Amino acid sequence: MIRVCLVAGARPNFMKIAPVARALAACGVAAEIIHTGQHYDERMSQAFFRELEIPPPLVNLGVGSGTPLAQTAEIMRRLEPVFLEQRPDWVVVVGDVNSTVAGALAASKLEIRLAHVEAGLRSFDRSMPEELNRIVTDAVSDRMYVSEPSGVANLEREGVESQRIVLAGNVMIDTLLANLEKARAVRACERFNLRPQEFALATLHRPSNVDLRENLQAILAALDETSRRLPVLFPLHPRTRKRIEEFGLVASISGNRVSVIEPLGYFDMISLIDAARVVLTDSGGMQEETTALRVPCLTLRENTERPITVEIGSSRLVGSNTSAILAAVDEILAGPPRFGTVPAIWDGHAAERIANDLCAQ
Ligand code: UD1
Image (cartoon, rainbow, N blue to C red; front, side, top):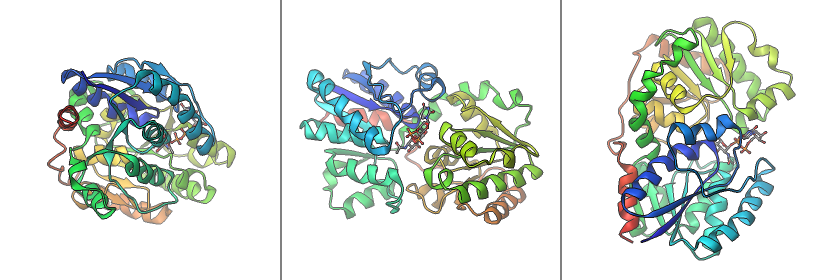
């Protein structure tokens, strides 16, 4: 029986490991989840294990927050004894967060075979912390599972042999499709007194948007203006909350109809994305979820490592300029409520393809 350690640590990892853990178990693989503890708030971590019925982790390394270097180094330091004791045949890492690159480096230095789920994505913007994490993780991976065709092209261009690359599809969308009916049933918008298709949903957490006062202020101004057109629901990431307070920007979103709320659980978030008239976000996962649901999405970034969401999906890059965001909001509101094409391989079966491939190695 092959033994796998699945490393996860931050919120977007959890919806990605859920179907992978399930598919590996269905193939008879002994898969243990190692939680790094990068995210630790109930609403950023445990809530997802509960809702998505993810098996409890073997261990939570409890690294918590820190500078990017301290956090990454600490995760590696704490993973070493776990990997040495578990001696897995494979370590599987997902996505592009600090826990991903730390898991990748730890596995490869201990000469454990490494698989990366969501490999090959590139924004070509090295000032983005996730871009370095992606490049380094792929450089030390033995097997690479890719979610969209651009990822295959990027890896081949970087010299990866094509036998090590599998265009497997999107595990985040596996989780979305598996839970969509349940999520729709929670009717989250009613709880916030919003009518389907008559509100905007906004999220924001990228350092390039929230750690620079100027950009944060410009985006908050756009949300405030948007709220004159339709109500805006704004679940606030802890990093963004901290910055809004530090920069003295609380007042800039407390007028009009921007409703600032705590981070949401998975079902609530999917229920709201599905019901929204427009989503404004800098989240990579939400770019994909809106594409899968054909919900108009304004991506508050200059570039994306997920080009398919812009090329055939419902997402559009709008950056952080107030008037550019508003012009795009107005165009969306004047256009159809749903549009775009869902990528063919985002069919809900990516994790099964990954598990079958891994078992055949
Ligand atoms: C991380 C990922 C990012 C991902 C995001 C989703 C990296 C480099 N970035 O960014 O790719 O899109 O997660 O959320 O790995 N905090 C809490 N409670 C928590 C977690 C964090 O209060 O449970 C606060 C802390 O003040 C912390 C800050 O948020 O310093 C940032 O957390 P961190 O894990 O460093 O990065 P994220 O911004 O969450």
